[in-house]
Length: 115
Ligand SMILES: [Zn+2]
Image (cartoon, rainbow, N blue to C red; front, side):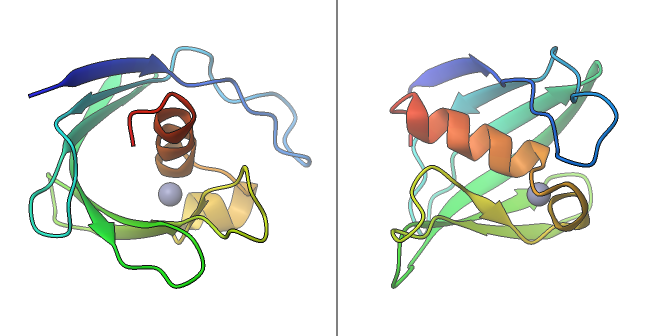
């Protein structure tokens, strides 16, 4: 089973006063499928959150479902082939800042060839 650790880039939202913390990190264990999850752990400001990451079918790009271990909350993420280089998430953080720890982690893992 593969284990990958990636430091997430500091992202500056257009309307944020300062960039997000530069100490964000993602650790991915395994390779996700539609039925067998990979296990990403995201660390932001020293707080770890564990998830299960599945792939989702997507007609216009790639899709993933991230399920938070603590409470089962789900976040669906996708790429759109018409707009390469972006991973969109449906969480409130993404809706507010146009990026979030979920989308930044998946994007970093895709860019790093881990997803
Ligand atoms: Zn999100």
